[in-house]
Image (cartoon, rainbow, N blue to C red; front, side, top):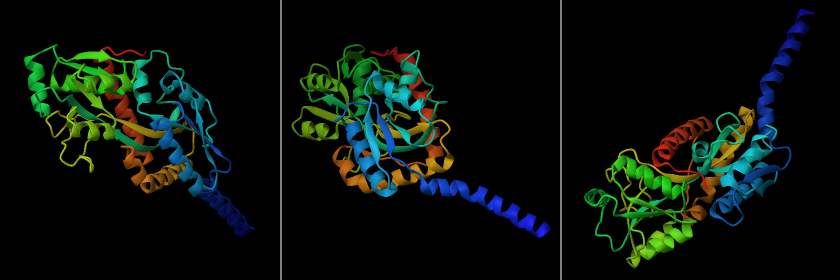
Length: 322
C-alpha cells in the first residue's frame, strides 16, 4: 500500500514538474495576434511583418499582424493590456511607448503593471547631423559653436515629444548648450527643411538618407547615437566617444505580453525571436535596423531604465503630447 502511495505521489509530482515544459513546447496552440500601434507600410509595421513570418514558420502557428494605429500607439497598448494572458495576443511596441508614460497624463494602462516584457527586436539608430553650411566637423566643434552663439542655432524635429525632439533635448541637457527647437508635423517636413538649410541641426533616423546626402554635401553626420559604432559607418564615432557622456538614444522595437503571461511562454518567444532576428539580419541592415537581443529579464530591466531616462528628458524639455 505504502509503495503504491509513493508511486502515485511521485507520478503527480512528475506531472507538475513537466507541465510547464510541456506548455512551453506546445505553445502556441492557436494563431497569435501581434498588435502593431502604427499604420501598415511604415518601418515598424514592415519589421513586425518580417518577424511574424519567421515566427509562423518556426512555431507552427500563424502570427497575424493587426494594425491599431492612433494616439502614439496607446490604442494598441490598451487593447493588449486588456487581453487574456495566454500569449495569444502580443504587443509589437516601439520606444515611443516608454516616452508616453511621461508624455501623457492619463494613460488607460500602466506600462509597468499591465505588461510583461518579452523580447527586444531591433535598434534603429539616429545620426547627429548638421547642414553642410554649418562650419563644424565634430561634435566638440558643434558644442563649442553653440556655446559661443547661444540661442542662434536651430534644430528640427518631427514634433513635440517625438524621437528627434527628445534625442536633441537629451543632447542639449548633457552638453549644456542652448539651440532652438523648430517642430514640424512629421519627420518628412523636418528633413526637407533641414536639407534645405532652414534648420542647422537634425538627428536623422534614416541611414540611407545620411549616406546619400553626405556624399553630395547637403548634410554632415557627426556621430551615431548607439553605444557601439555601426559596421556601415565604421569611421563615425558614437556620441559617447565624441565626448557626450552616457549618451544613447535610438528608436527600438520590442514585444510585450499582457501581465500574467507564463514564464515558459515568455522564454520560448524570447528564444524564437532572437533566432528569427539573426536570420533576418541582412534584410534588416538594408533598412538601417540592427538586431537587438537580450533575455526577458534583461529586457525588463532595460524598459524600466528607459522609462526613467526619458521621464527626466520630458520634464526638463517641457515636451507635451500633440
